[in-house]
Image (tube, rainbow, N blue to C red):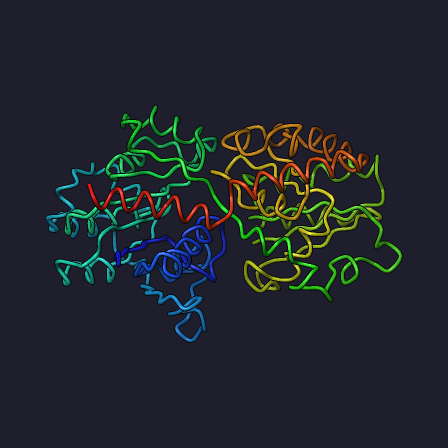
Length: 431
């Protein structure tokens, strides 16, 4: 049996691709490969809580606080009141930190991003030697990456990081922060584009980065209206009775500028000039910018928008979400901030075409004109043109959806991703 320590930034019921990635790998490695996986993380729910006491945190009374799908979760409080100087001084008294040779600029930037978990550091320092064979952390540019390196150095075990590097987003390109990634024994990139970026910018060898993509529970999406939710249909439940034959465009993700959701809102008036009978469905955590744009858009006559947040959903497998994927005509997420984009896989698993932005890792994920279309990031006119093109062509939509479904079944199931991760772990632990 291999003992693995996972150190994600957050964990379910926090929802994003990075959290779901480590959750599914932990569950499959435990069940299928007999790993003992210990999960240590923060108590943050939203991103704000990683560095701001006004953010949302999970309470001990929550049913998911210490267990998710039969795996024990160890959550530690984030300390907001400790100054950067005090944290730096404290870390410099830890031998395993000093052995990493991290610059003060890198350390300061990681501290600013959070989450700083003083009790978690103390927990592992006091334990001393641990019986772990490997530590795996996600994601860049957060402080838990540094904690995983301290633990790895203290116990002389391999350290792995899946950074989900958003290399097309200027916010992530601070060279001082990137320094921490070069300290890991292995980086897992989601695409070859991400791998090449990391090689070029970290000055590390090719063999220190492994490309392992994201995954999807393919069979679950295939069974949505067969066994799982055979009596629940999204359009029947949420479309007006006379509008159930309207077309549907779906977005699923964080509702911010980087993910392209605001650009979609700006594209809707242009789409409606060409096609009136269409619903737009948004699923994901809200932002003030999105809500403002949505409020302005709703003033237009005959604009059909359905908007869900995690507050009215029940996790990753919520019936509203899964049936929306199964019944939509197009999945649209023109993002510049995805290292891969699990939602594209969910759309293809549902047999639907996708539209993404021609930037970052997405051009490697979407095979343009085969299983989806690419648009210019933050270009509402281009987004509208591509949406209209697909909505008007049933045959093309079906052809792209089938191509995507075949691609996912062959290459992107969570079982395949977990198997590749298991094989890499075993190699690291034996060498």
